[in-house]
Length: 156
Image (tube, rainbow, N blue to C red; front, top):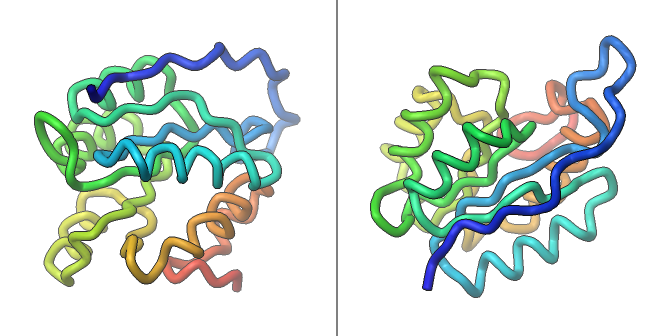
């Protein structure tokens, strides 16, 4: 059964002025595959400065939890129960443009990449080829270097 999972509230202190994100980086995961959700949450635990704020396998649950918790970043699959990652991106990004969206999907054709990037995604990763880049991208965001990590996960 796919469900939204509430995590403990973020009780960390506010960052000093000028930091782009609160420390740790609060990340929400919207992933359609239960097996991959577990694997990705484990990956988050290996990245210094990253904290999972919530997990959902459905478009509706993800949208509601993202708008409620306002994470710093969202790792978003395009294939979700009851809708798509594009539905989530379209519902959230116009209202909360400060959230960094990282698309992690098997639907990696150029038309999907263009559409997601045009709708506000910051990164677009193919699960089959780019999974290993997710950790470095999150680490860059957590360290405040997110604006210096390009869409290929390479620090400039």
